[in-house]
Length: 150
Image 1 (cartoon, rainbow, N blue to C red):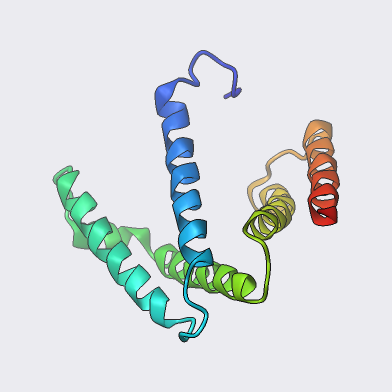
Image 2: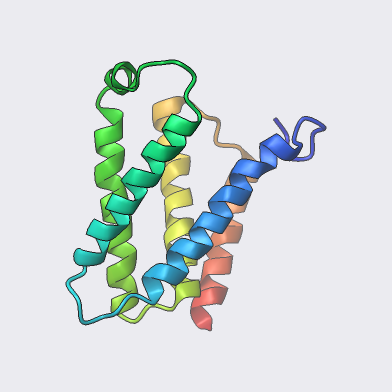
């Protein structure tokens, strides 16, 4: 679906708005984390809070399916994503402690992720690598260069 298509209405953009709002709160929270504490200590609280909030939202939006059955159907993927989330959280927290600015850390990481996922999409999911997508990557790299210059 094109981003400008008539189907790209509220329910198309609402999840992206949720991602943006969550990312802003996430990075502001991590950037402000006290530097003297062990980097994994706040992650324990973060994941406990996330687990409780997720369970509450899951119960509030129950469609009658058994949580246990749905977890079994999900297979190995949630475990891999869980480990990946720890890597993301810890990586950004350590980047901020190492002196990265909130603006450049996020932009740098997301551009590198976008480039990597273009390759993953092409190789693993047979997504087309079009000229416009390659031009987008070049534009992102130019933007990264500009952001890095300060």
